[in-house]
Image (cartoon, rainbow, N blue to C red; front, side, top):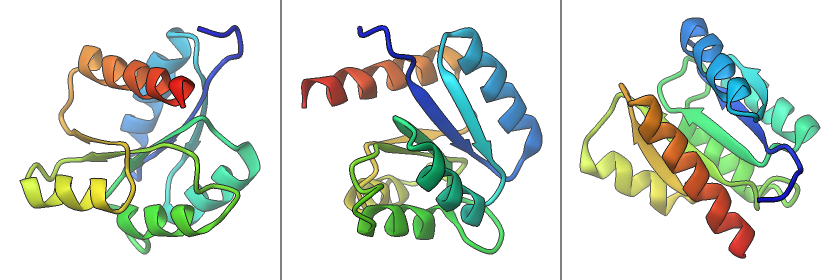
Length: 129
C-alpha cells in the first residue's frame, strides 16, 4: 500500500451516520470529507478529488442515483470509484447501482468490518488498474 493517504468522501443526509463514518475512517488512517446532500456531493467531489465516494441513495432533492450519473458523465470525476450505501436491499437496486457504474453496493445497516473490508478491496482493485 502506498504511503499516500486515501481520501474518502462520505455522502449521507443523516448527520449521525456522517459523523460516525468520519470518525471510524479517520481512525483507520483515511482522509475524510463529508457531504450532506447530492448537490454538496458533486461540489465536494469536484474540489476534493477523493479516491472513493461512499454515496447514500435515499436523499432529498437529488438522490444518490442522480449524483452517480452526474459523476460518471463528468470527465473530471468519471474515474472516481463510487460505492452506494443503502437501506434498500433488493437485488434490482444492487443491479442498478452496478449498471450505473458503482463499484460496490453496501447495504445498511452494515457491519464496520464489512465496510472496511469492502473499502480495502476497492482500493486494492483500483491500484491494480
